[in-house]
Image (cartoon, rainbow, N blue to C red; front, side, top):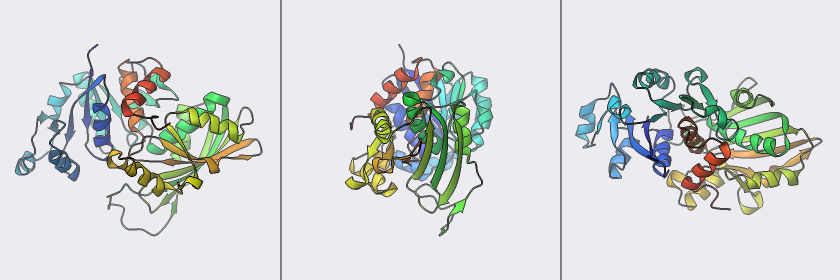
Length: 342
């Protein structure tokens, strides 16, 4: 079977990680990446020896790339002519415009969480509703927070059944290196329910969800607390057993030094993970508590890398490489090395 040919639109925080993730897949070929300006990420790509071909979108100043001796393989449309599916990690709103080109070229696409849900046929998650994405032309990922949140809720739901959840999100205000939000010393709360709770119900309509979100002036990771009501009482031991079986969930302990988001980022760097990335969410064992009939726990979201595995799952669904979530996620995990730490 020939490899699925994949392109990436937008070589930023998510795009560069998508490119690396696709390049690791044994049944996929990364044809190239597309961008509009010689950003620091593109300059770093050039300094790395241009492992990926670069294509320029409309509006790009070719001379700026030439002045920096950055090789260009062609135009955005040239890239589209060579691929089966595009991963669109362009800034919010740009993907919707790009869709017109994808439809014109007759190719599939996967959009990131910043786009409106209306851009896609399926609002997608690799574990919770994979089968709905099989054969679909246009899929959209959930946001980083929603992706990790759904992993944990779906894990308990499949094991024991979940009726409703109440979540609180302590959200980092910007990615590392971002300055556009300014220098802050404040927390900001959004009105409830947060979009993550609403999005969870869109993916998992049988679960009632609500939530509150608080923006915090940090850059490495979000922390989410979840209060879940099961169809049966879920004990701490039952929750730990389910979480430990999930390859994209890493159980950690405060007692071992995992004190918070910074501990996990440092651990990822110490592991030698590129960019300090971690594909797994982390759940603190000491955070898992029983509250009457409910179970409560806290998880860490490594926001820069969390959606990469689910995006690759989306390629598998759209292109019918695997027909079930169990098969697809297992292959994605194998190529990304997820779960090898167990």
